[in-house]
Image 1 (cartoon, rainbow, N blue to C red):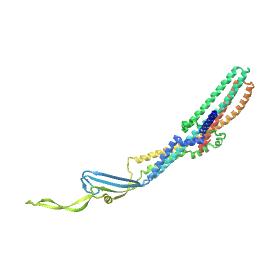
Image 2 (image 1 turned 90 degrees about the horizontal axis):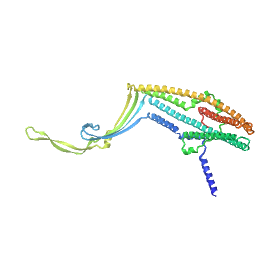
Image 3 (image 1 turned 45 degrees about the vertical axis):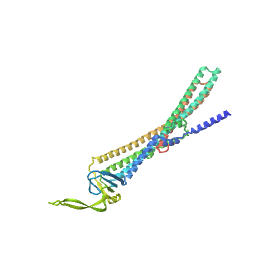
Image 4 (image 1 turned 180 degrees about the horizontal axis):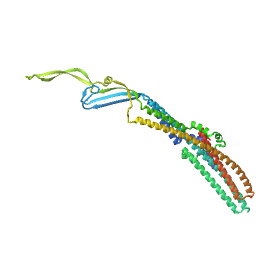
Length: 474
């Protein structure tokens, strides 16, 4: 009963482990990298920065609007701006206003700046696509490297089985006294070498997986259970060789994001030059404001006046005092709402700015913009030429890889028959163990060479597929 329970637990654990080791296809790797790779995410931030610049340049066409308010106290003599009278005591004053201005004409400098930021935004978007393409190609290379090494493991395992069978056969012959003990030692030595080759091939699989999981930036938990799907690659890339290098270049120049990014930056430099030239011409702007203010020194009369008599002198030759009457009024500070209404003011004006001399800053900006335009033109030509060189090289490499793969296939077929014949002759004691192992080694090396040529050709064809603008799939 306990044994059956343990078997159920083991089976359940193996089932959970199998689910956690769901194999990843190349497309799943690419999709995951596009969502989590830090280089891709960083490139995406550049798009957001460019979008902010573009939106800001468009809003610059709209009128600005600003509000300001202040309140303070004055000490000492001054002219009150709201009563136009001298004030010597402490006076509290406040004001508030709204102002706005808009450019009516600036030689289309702002419009060209909008076009510049728009092209810069497009260039950032193309850069983002280019980063994704580079990551996808690198993923494809690492993915194929895993498949290559897994096939090498399968070959190594098969060679171990053959060597094990050889050791068993030689041991039986030695025990029967038909072969010397030295032949058994040779067979066991060959088996040890094949086991070493298997271990080395398995280590290469581990390293290849490490490269891919690091590029995917997987967590340690996911990396431990990472496996890949082994697709059918028998017909990969053959039809791509039908295209000439020139045909691939023509399509690539229309589709490749790095070329489009260079073209967008070239256009942006042209608009930047036009915007800089606009600063050499007069500009016309319209501005206006509304505002009001308040002063504690602004007072009004309250209640009835009182009469106060005060001396103004004496009569000459007598002691009689001359007096005069004066009306005195009680006063209070005029209330806030009345002052705001009374002091309400408006302003509107047209401003014409004619640049004459400003330390040569505007002319220097134009000259810098000209240099930037020439630099962008050169960069565009460099990227176009580099693309052509890369495609021509990739096309030659793909054809060479295809020819190597076809030759390797022929060599494997020939050595396979030779190895089968050697097995029969070895069992019949027609050839010795050394001759048999030499033929087996040649066959094993031919298989490894064919696998390397196969995956080299598949990757080279994927590069051509990439230049044609096709998605990278297996």
